[in-house]
Length: 377
Ligand SMILES: [Zn+2]
Image 1 (tube, rainbow, N blue to C red):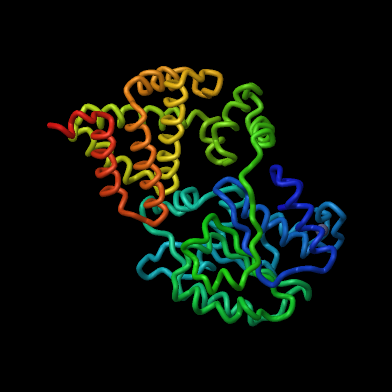
Image 2 (cartoon, rainbow, N blue to C red):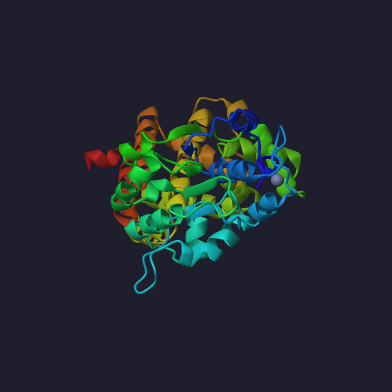
């Protein structure tokens, strides 16, 4: 992975490269940014630049042995830790899953935890990093660099580290051997021990710029009209994965789910709501959060509709039709209530709430908010 393969983020790339060229390489950095912003590709490009035998002013050379090995994620001094499943009798270490991880990242360097989970065929199992991975890391870090230069310890999604693992790597994270660099790449810091955070330098990765995301979409989907690409980029909040789902028409499925679920909530059809709940529970955490964000987007659209601001409305087609009807249904009080309930649900999903309980409660709350007369009944 080279910097030139990364979408946008020009200022950040220039700063990272400039720092390396000036000899400022912190011993631990945390690339922190939202889903689909490129935290992992950036960390990998950074590692490639460190390893490169002929680094240029703007990027690694792409031709030396180190670059070639990094292109396959097979550089012997690139050590990787990532979340896995704990399965009976199978080792709880990353080495066991390295081939899968390499394939998944080479296929889609912007991948998220859900795509990784799907690759491991573990739908609803919990991804974790435990103390065995810490042991594996310490063992690898105790060896000399194979090629005599930098040694990189990459931790993907550090927010999934168990406290036991986190505590076990504290010391080495604070004072790694000279030439060892920790690169953490993740999406949230509120589940990471403060003692870990205080030992890393934060590299904030912003969401993608809509214009740059639109160009990237057209590169990936040449058949996509430029207007559609711009539309999608504007709606996906700088998240490449969300934008790709929309470009591939997968958002159609999400729209139908949201529309039919909200109708069931409104009509108080609890049998249907339970069926939606089962489906929701199987979606995977990132998609569940995506649905909450999408619902918030639809509510904002409905609000604009009510305020008669059609020039700000990004919806079209069936979604537009739904937004119009939905908007007519809501007063300001209900809209605010829905917004708060969905934001709270999103936050709870981030904290690993039980999706079934959460979704059932939410369905009931939304139904009540949409039909305030039920309060009086
Ligand atoms: Zn090179």
